Length: 211
Image (cartoon, rainbow, N blue to C red):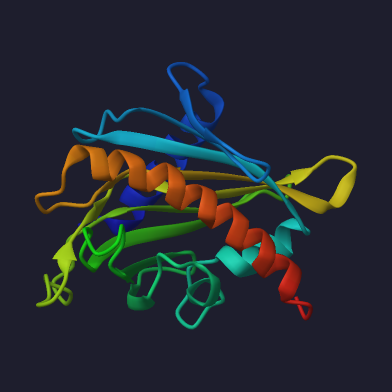
């Protein structure tokens, strides 16, 4: 499989999600984030978009978000239990396995996801992570976990003009959780989970003084 080509296609897809305003419906709004959704063209579910501002420079925010083993994200993101490198494809492309804990009061069992991830840096200072599900021979489904599938998803950190200590963060979640989950559980899980994500990210950026 051409992992690098798949990852770079995701970056284009996320930029199109960011710029295309059509069809999005707001499903949750707080001081930290606006969460919107629309039907996915990738699978029979929804793609969710989060938009919010975080107090901190793009590099500082990115330090909390970047998809690396032993990174900061596992310390603050309640939906990431472990993050493992499966294979480093190139300097900015890797295949990784993410393990998530049970959620929704145990209705959603622990899951794992295998994705190719591209870290993309743009000339204007924007940094993004771009991921989608792949099959990797060294990481088959494992006992105790439901194998889920991420369709084009990721985070985009955008500098705010005139404020070097503020970052606009876009997030896109487009996940097939698999298993026999009621649609109502899935539809309520993602908006609330994304709101928590932004709240916890803001606290993490503020608390990591050494960044």
